[in-house]
Image (cartoon, rainbow, N blue to C red; front, top):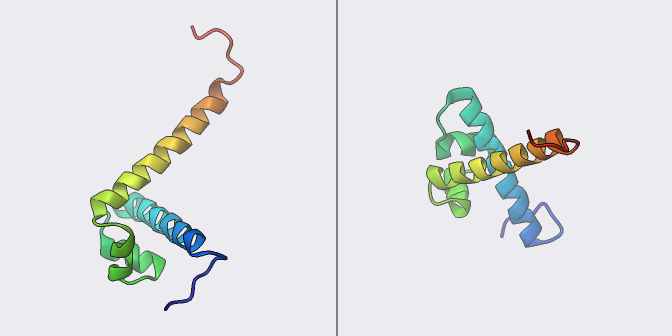
Length: 87
């Protein structure tokens, strides 16, 4: 069994997912195309290990989009927190 890099298996899996999403984001920004091979190379994992977390590049890209939208919502909330009149 491979060593985990966190106190619990659940935390380890979450850290791996975060690393995969971060790698996919970087690959997307650099090349515009996300492949499982490129993400695997960026994270130092095998392609089969990436497939343990995501069934396809489309599923991985969906998580990238969700994370980016969450960051955008946070950014907008800060930008408008002192606005009293929406007009």
